Image (cartoon, rainbow, N blue to C red; front, side, top):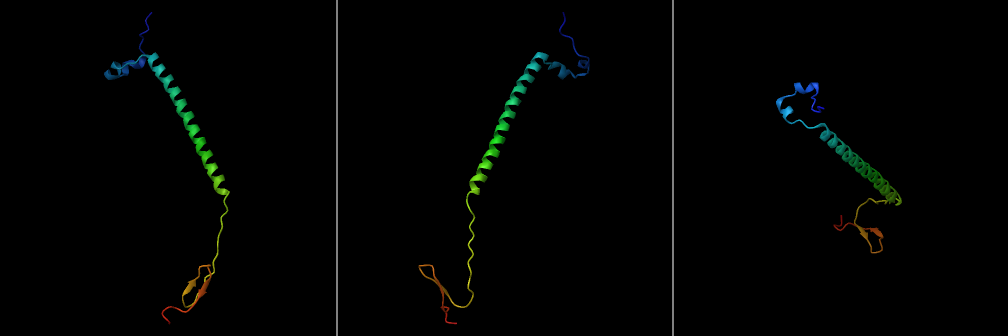
Length: 99
């Protein structure tokens, strides 16, 4: 029983490629191992992606509970200096230079 049959394309390979010939069962084992690793990476990626969406939705819900308050202030234009008292009252008086 001869298990060392070479495929037809073997003759077309370069000398370097023939020297680095890897048995088929080693290649299959490596491919199986890479399939398992790729499945793990894909599962980890999906978990991270789902967690990204969950945290973004959480932040949107958290931030939407606060109301946005806008305050409009009327400004009186005119000459003189504006004096603000400790109680927050604004009185418009003469300018300091006496113009």
